[in-house]
Length: 355
Image (cartoon, rainbow, N blue to C red; front, side, top):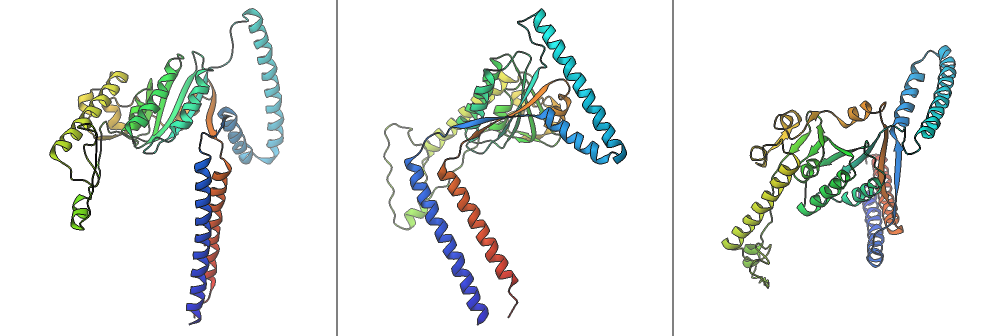
């Protein structure tokens, strides 16, 4: 009986916490609806050359003999100071000889795109590209680390269009697929001058999918009427609750085929080396197989690509960070509080001795 009483108390505490968080979330949502709109954000830029240099230095110092560590640091500081003075002198002389030119290394800008079914990350991508196109020089390059299983056609079409803006500045665009670039993900990837992929990354499919349930029989069985009014013969081809017709199904298939045709044409225009009839079957390919059918150009991870450019390029990771409004911050705080509360309750219940 004592165990049941304690369990009842535990359950009451849990329900109270859930109810309280629920009220907070509802209030946040209500206020958020009144304050809808795009929040300002900011661009973050991290120089990866320095990051990898610091990591390598940390490893080097950790593995050095203690007696050599101090002398090594002193020698490296002396060398860095000498190199900085030499570069500064050379740059000044170069600008004096040719004020219109620049001796700077070419730059590799690294972007990241993690796509969901709605391609929600396109909001960040468009801001990052907008910043870059104003700064890109002819010998610069953009590397997009892409991960997406695809999604809505119009959303990924917009994401691909954002990448096409880079070509207008004469810069090279490389897309790296470490895990997956399927369907809409490959629609984005094929815009690149070069596509690299990990050996077991999933590439493709170049296909179109649509599916939806129909509850007409269930409603009819329970004597529930559903009425749908449209203006235009094909305003609604298939419906969730009404009775679908063969004519509507046929029109829906025609629309899918037309979308597939547009997808194939887009890939054909951007990757002329691809035999579109061979690859546009809705199949997927792993990295090596994808290279065999020219869907990718090289088997290489994004990490290897970046490391290969550290000496020859200034490598910068660019990320647009949206500003969170107070409703989002409060929602995140409520979520963390809920998680902590459940953890404490679970720990308390687990620590009680069995009766």
